Amino acid sequence: MPSRIAAAIATCALSLGALASGTAVATAAPSAPTTGAAGDSPSLRTAIDARAAAVDRCSYQVVRSHDSRYVYSVSGVFGGGARELTVQKEDYVRLSDDWSKVVQVDTCAGGQGQAPTALRVTGKLDHPEHYDPSVPRTIHSNDLKPAASSVIPKAPALTSIDRLDAATVRVTWKPAQGNPNQVILMERKPFYSSELGLWHPYTFQRNVQSGATSMDRKLERSPGVPPTDRTHAYWMRVVNGGFVSDLRAEKPVTVEP
Image 1 (cartoon, rainbow, N blue to C red):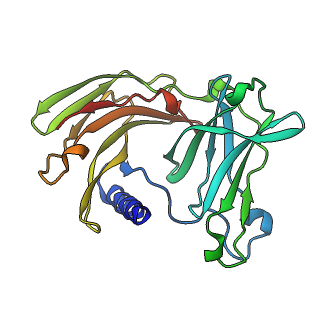
Image 2 (cartoon, helix red, strand yellow):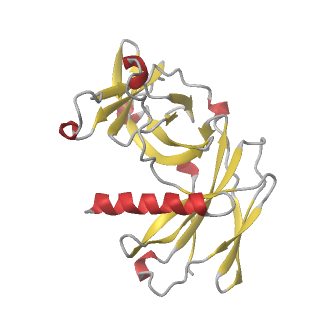
Image 3 (cartoon, rainbow, N blue to C red):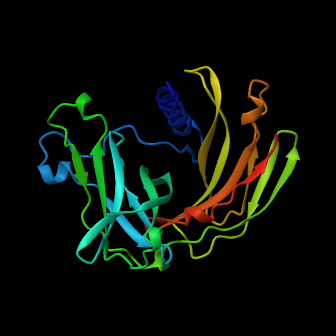
């Protein structure tokens, strides 16, 4: 039942983002497969499109395509062997009108200090008994040579959240540095699923116009929102050159409606 609830909320949120005016889009996993269609060569059908970069000495970011039928892992290549890496944080992000998964992994966990020469992404089909044998059971990326940490953009810090009236706040942040491709205001707030008939906390990404340093947001004040789900939260995210600002550095600022 929880998986059905999550799937329904994701679908409703995506629909809301697509219909809304402006650039607000709900963050959610894409439901359509990203592997090739029937008739493609096996190498095309099994490939994971991914790129990697160092965030710092121990943290690496992998941005990859997503097929919700698969469970993914990231491995590092060290010398002649490979080992699976610990996930520090992950999220979905919209890049060039398509959803991608951003995963940050720890290469120093367990006292390891050696930098990987490459990273690999592997996807294993979840519940393969539910799929036709023609669906690949395992998909892979190529070996990914990590780019330098300089390609990871920096997200601007929030400076204030000011209440304009009972139902509106103005979120203000410092100017973004380095002319990134995309600046995003992340907003977590109650979302109503008409399909399920319930409120649930949900995260939206609000694309920011070039040069803007503030955005007015409406608070969800419906009396039907459960007290435990009423809190709103805001933080910044930046995308540049296909990479995303350090997910670990995101510090949501909360507001009570």
